[in-house]
Length: 239
Image 1 (spheres, helix red, strand yellow):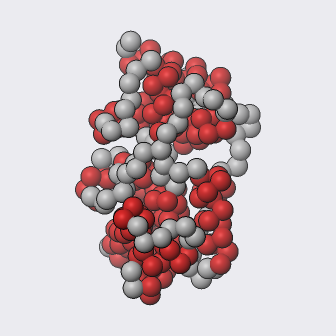
Image 2 (cartoon, rainbow, N blue to C red):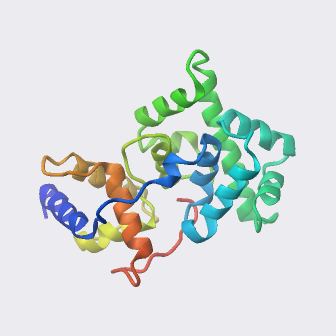
């Protein structure tokens, strides 16, 4: 199958499953920058609507003064240890190795973004992060080199701050595998990068009416809401 044939096949399938209209994206529109950072780590491989979203909403309501990324970084620092922050602010995140890695990942993402903010002191914090999100590339996750925060988390972070791209999580990989009758194993970084390219190229196709972000959301909605989708979705750590 040629590249063009693959793109056409993806676009055809997206049109078949796209809800009309596409629901409002609360995650991007309503959450603060601080909550978006936490989201980019905690939501990986988890049941977002049932488990993660209520926790993020509760944190935002409980901590109205922790809105910006720099405020979140200071808030975590006040706890003395990232896992103490995570276990106190989010129920069920006890002092276990996996949770410690997640807590450290949140802290590390904050540090990376604070570095970007500090590099442009004359630019408002929100604008500095958005500019980074728009200019960064999918392979940038490897430069950050954060455990429990690989390409899907990096791409999701970019999307949360305005980038028109896609995140190669289990939903995207399973959808592409089924649509194209190809293998997109979650352990292959090469196939994850290819998945991002395919979604972006589908969006850029001359016949496409969808942004890359829209395609990503359409796939996520379909895979997460449809009973027994074409392939079962399984969570994988370190997305």
